[in-house]
Length: 75
Image 1: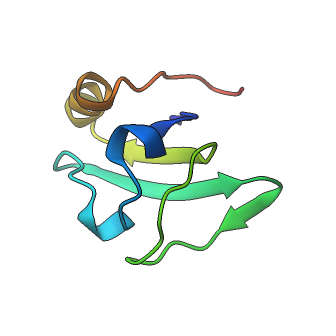
Image 2: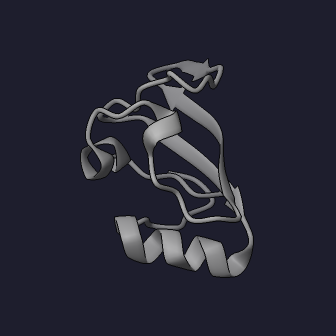
């Protein structure tokens, strides 16, 4: 699991469908405050969102390099 506070700052206030994620990755879940956000293409990332991303190891490494993602099992 990947959690990153501030990912929205790295990509700006873009709709999820417009974020240039590496091939082989997908956003599985967004936690916002005490809620789980149901993902849609027009979902906009907000500062403070906890984003869970799934993917192949090499794609996750590319994602980490591109956006400065920090890997952790929990915050």
